[in-house]
Length: 498
Image 1 (cartoon, rainbow, N blue to C red):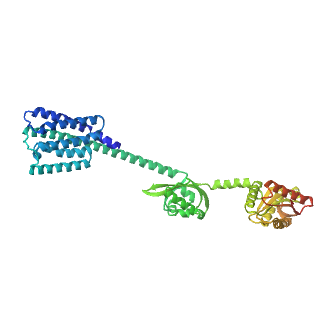
Image 2 (cartoon, rainbow, N blue to C red):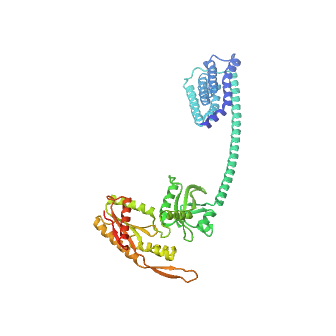
Image 3 (tube, rainbow, N blue to C red):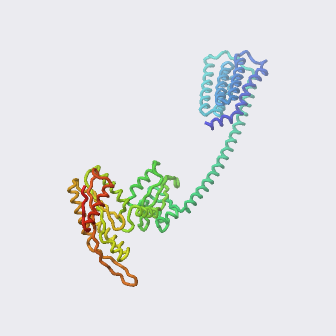
């Protein structure tokens, strides 16, 4: 839209010359040729008509309606000369020479479509005038004086000169614009090339591992990604398919993500995954991909950040938060969470579960006699025995010191059967922990030796369902039953009775 307006405004000087010709031409013609003009209607109506077209066109130009002025000028002049031709000689009329000029002006000032329209109309009028002469339909024609031909020829010659001057000026101006555009494009191309060189340099020196692949084939890899995967060189990595670098468990998810990137679908900017180094080592990574054009074809640029150490640290923090450091058993916090899950499951599906409190009976004497190192070894052994006595779905937790808690989930749907099952498991645990412990000891300046220590266990068992208990009550019940076992002589199992 703006380009059209600018193009029209560049034609204003030429339009002004044409308006001047339309305004002054009729006046000059009437003043100079007044004595030789005939009484033909064309001599009295033609000049005022040209003058009126010029006057209205001048007004439209002054109010910045350039396109309307162009159309009015071409149409008005065409209609006027057609009328003059009818009354001033037909095909021999001196104004017939204006038709070719109008065709040129229509194409130059307006559009090729206007030039075609003007050509068609002019040819139709020409044939019509010829036919009219043959059939004697035209009014009686009086031959115009030669002076009229002279004046018309002078005006057409001047208009042609003005037109060609403006054509050449516009052509020169267009050439200058094209040259300027060419220079600007050259500058932009150089700037883009420099920008691409800077970007490539940044990628090459970036510590972030970056590669580009197309349909699973790697087409570019920076030094950081070669180092990340432990590839011997860039050529070896470029010969590798991306699927070979992704852990088998993560390939399907990564394939779907790549498909979404290519399809420009909205996905999270980054995701965690696992990749494989060339030596088979599994690494945890955070990977981010984006669709780009590489060497003129669609591709995916991938940024890979090694988060193996971070994941390791997160696991260590989780271990510290939810597991006992010595025995690697769940601690009180994790046990509380699992007990909540068991109560929630029981509420939905029914059934009973059991919580067991355990306290080692003869543990303090070992610590007092041989020190905490041997006491820790016994606790580790006891934890291993406890794991073997229960199912994978059950929870063995350490509360601290020599106290352990066992959560048995999903027993029978009746309290009687569940109680029998829980007591059977508790007895199995009591017997397993009552076997002697053979512990290795290291005395200063002497060879390693072993000692055997007998350590029994007192256990309290609380069988519960979500309908009859809450979390706090269950712990109290099992703890009370354990103290009852201790009060009754230790090395025994006691059931809490509601």
